[in-house]
Image 1 (spheres, rainbow, N blue to C red):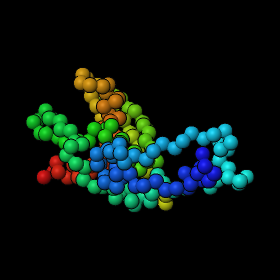
Image 2 (cartoon, helix red, strand yellow):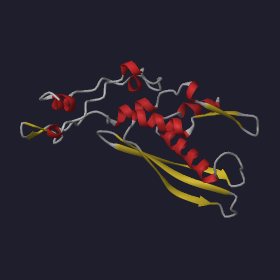
Image 3 (tube, helix red, strand yellow):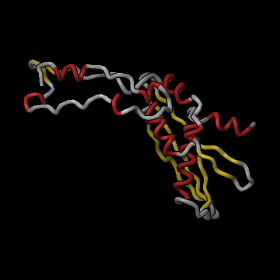
Length: 188
């Protein structure tokens, strides 16, 4: 590796990813992906340049909380939504949990989520889960909690705790703005 190449690699800024530039967009073309850096030689592996430590990059994945919330508040395209038919014949649109997870990874890469509580009803027929989603921005952090409940007798895909957790996760994301417009559409 040429002298100073490592410092340029560490200090250099990456081009804006098409996924981050256009919310919920298709994956970037392979031709637009940056080339992988060459492996370091044994003399370059200490990250020093002339005996001095190379500066550590401090910008990149995180951004101010207001920017994260603005991106999450945008309308989710129909292509990412699923529809479930309720027992009363009402069609309900929702974001599958794994796609909500991907959206959070794209717009708030330093988010975290945790199950706060699992409670079975006194009659044992349902289970409720409390889930917390926390967003970390460069200037602040914010969290929202929500609950989800599932019937123990429901024999559909997944166990009742999984279903309740997915529901609680999606609701906590909605409280941060992700897919919130879907709740307003249901009312009209």
